[in-house]
Image (cartoon, rainbow over all chains, first blue to last red; front, side, top):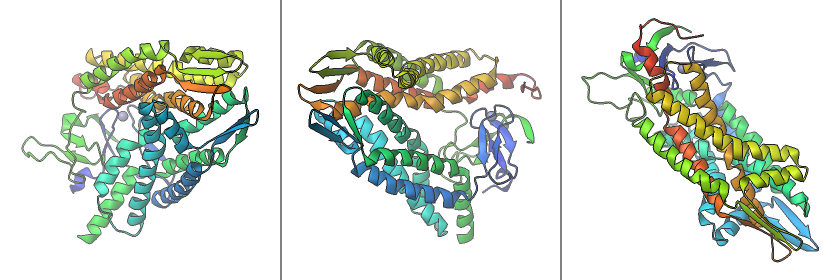
Length: 208
Length: 216
Ligand SMILES: [Zn+2]
């Protein structure tokens, strides 16, 4: 790789060419012209992102197995978990909507978390995993479409709407989704793509 | 931070859109791929303005049925109601859930509308080569990208309620056709904002003296 361009950084929002400077731990650099976040020195980025993501994945499984909430009306009871919600909407002839919900709250979070765990655990063992470029590309494209935190807010709104006409019983998955939202936010806060690419370069350099 | 005071593109530098590595792109070499991740190097997103406009116009069109048609049908022994997005918010407000009603109003009414308007203004300003308030416009773009996804809220609410409340004649909730149109609006505007190229906001400023200062 070209030595003299390694220290250069281009703002992705305004295209200003700047030189990278060393940052203190936990600090971030923003563009001097438009204020965009350029990069940050996330503390122990790889380890922390891996830890938060692994924890998130376990909680995610729990959140998908257990019921979110149940309602009771004159002895009649209806229980719901996320997968049942998706399939129920599908049978109600809203297949497109069911697909959107499935992709944004089940498929993409699963794919994103698993590929992150695979990528980061390999890098931790100083191995460049198979298909690392494709994985980095995919994480970048897919991550705005993972919407667990919005689903979480949606659950709270539904809860308020339900309490006006039903007796509502809260399920374990509701708490799990709350915890999951927090864990995913923590993982996103410690994630730094720049850090990962630099590490990939370093490992590549050691091998050759 | 030390700067070079001009755009990277003008000096032949290009940052990879996948891995952000900066490389020099000469006219001589025909390999215009990133040396690190092999992605095709490009100075600007291709056909950004026209792609963004087409997605945005489709979103405008679907915005009409999304607001006029029924979002959710609620039926029980006592009453039956059909709600559009707006009447749903009003109903929540009237039943005393002011907090939730405000959240839903922001996510389903304000954000989509502000997003459509903001992206249109940004596109028009870029097409006219406007030099006004570039920093403000860039911040506007960043906030559109940040909050746009939260409009999906109503889709999840309708899904959860329609799936859960299936008790025959006692209580039933059904998703209406507006849910589909509204979901499409959210997805289309998300794609539109991804297609928009914020660097186009700054390009017209480069055509003046190379050492002028735009930070205010
Ligand atoms: Zn910038």
